[in-house]
Amino acid sequence: MERIEELAVGSRLLGHIDGRTTDLADGLFRNRVDAYSDPARAVAERNTLFRDLPLFMGLSSRLAKPGDYVTEDVAGMPVLLTRGTDGAVKAFANICRHRGAPVAQGCGNARAFVCPYHGWTYDLSGSLLGTTDKVGFAGLDLGSHGLVRLPAAEKHGMLFVRPKPMEPGESAEVDVDGNLGAIAPDLAALKLETYPMFSVDVVKPRINWKFAIDTFLEVYHVPHLHRKTIGPYFIGNVGTFDSAGLHGRMCVARTSIDAVRGLPEAERNYRPHVITIYQLFPNTIVIWQVDHIEIWRAFPGRDDASHCEVEMTIYRPEQTDKPDAYWEKNRDIAIRTVMEEDFPLGERMQIGFESGVTEEVIYGRNEPSLVHFHSSIRAALGAAAA
Image 1: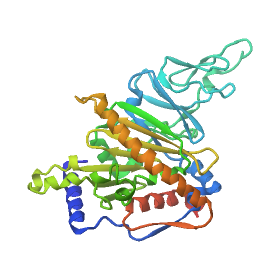
Image 2: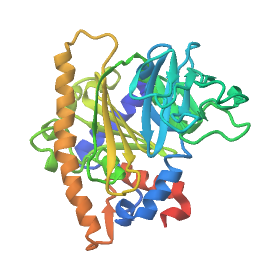
Image 3: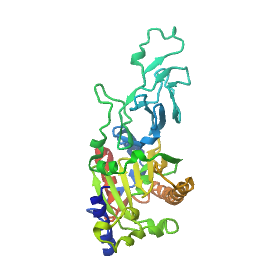
Image 4: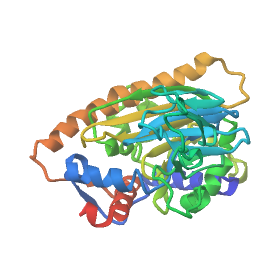
């Protein structure tokens, strides 16, 4: 964030620490447990939140050079994201126009994509270059049988895709700033384009995808659940929250923040003492961890509200004198905290929701980021969330 915003957030945090307070939502928020377990609700979320909206796909370094590509299953939509020879990022449905096989798998660098089923070949712009058995497909218009285009964009060092094919006449570009709104300058200030990927881990916990996002939207639980891992390093149940349309930003203080108290306000450097958590609607958490970026993305299972896939990536600075062992230690801390503490407890909570014993969960006023996230989901789904 910009310097003036850093000072404002730091001052708010110190005020909360001294007053034993925190930013508050307008009121309690009650959410039916069906939101985490109802199959019909899960279908509505996949069709609306994971089709109609631009989704964050990672930092620009995932596609560092021309020819680089990455494939993902985005809640049932096979996506192929590429960087063309012109340096531009494009996205396609990863579906061959002949018989529907994926034309690429995993990630890598390629000059063209060859379907493994019958050898149809596509270039980096998605155009069909040719078919095998040209006699059998004589008369086929190659120009109208390229890969199906998906709207995509790259800005502020971030990649976005809308996993829904374009309508006739629709722009192929996602309006990133229009989507991010007031949070865009904050993210631009991070200079995310300077962070290469260090590691990627994928898990498939037995929890609803929203549980994975909920994990990061309050620090009320940190002194309790994480008392032996990260608890001693953070001030629990204290934070600032600022909304930006459907998105939000939460800042939490390390216990080391007391070090700035002896300095004049203008000379205070809050950055080493504050963790900033950006919630990019609907399914992404971007955490500025002082010297690296940690990103979590959650995707719903295809046909089961109680399963999801979660990806955690660590991006380190481009220029660093720290060895890989340092970044590996940060990765291990994240894994031990979230994958070995938060998610296992979430799995037991998921079972409790499915038991039918309770009808709702309650988010407190001291959990404004959590309240905002679920309010945004209701707003995006409209009648489907009732």
